[in-house]
Image (cartoon, rainbow, N blue to C red):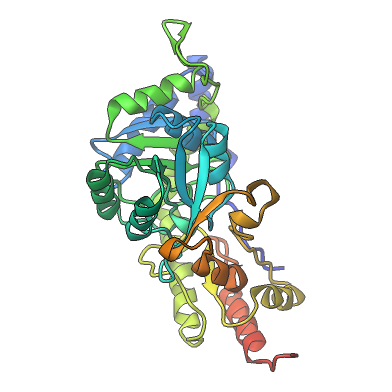
Length: 368
């Protein structure tokens, strides 16, 4: 079977020098030297990160939740986010005691835009906005900076899968995931990034039981620190990143070249390779997925069903175009998006097999 997603993490030999440093330091967690070095290197690694503060955490979910709490988002607050996203986006809001409010996405980018958020603000009270870098496609940082400046509404971007390709802004705040399936994965981990150093320190305190001189400052304090072992993997991944990105770019360019023969298949407007390769199909995506499975090609339907179709979120408020409770673009994408195999271990032959099988299915006469 051609697998849909295969992590690319360091081998044991690459990690050994860093593990030996941990042995020599005898410091395993609580902001050890490898964690501090990893955070410093991450700031230099991200475009626009030279003036930012980075806080490593135990998961991407923690970066969302603690970022919201540091921004003062809690009970009685409303957070606008797209219905087309991974459930962690809404769960983080709910765990803060706030209310997730679901919005639509752009038909071109499959992401919430500042224009969509402004329309929602004109109709409802919104206390914070959490746009999503869908499938690892970077958001326009300048446009969201301008939104935050012009509205005064704080913005925390769920950029879970976009580390390494997302340029940072000056006013919005960023939450990244370092899960094994992400392009810059380390196994498990998260990252909060902000140009506001004071806010970043709030996140750091919340991640360490909200201790200040061993006195608890907030009832929302938790244990979400990154260990030295996770940081060791991260430091090796930073060294491997140029090769990882180049290989992903080669696979992505191969896909784009072959998919050009299928003009009815849509892609996000991407320059850098995404984290996961989703295509918009002219046919029912579930049926196409079943056909590809018969050819031993694994697919995924990331972000689907959309949040408003999950039992836990069915009662959430939806704000669509012109004040409607329908989310027409999300509804259309829910039937047409399909994730194809995309990872650094794919060969050109694998890509050809996937695209040829997809073409065969799309050309077959419909049974209805």
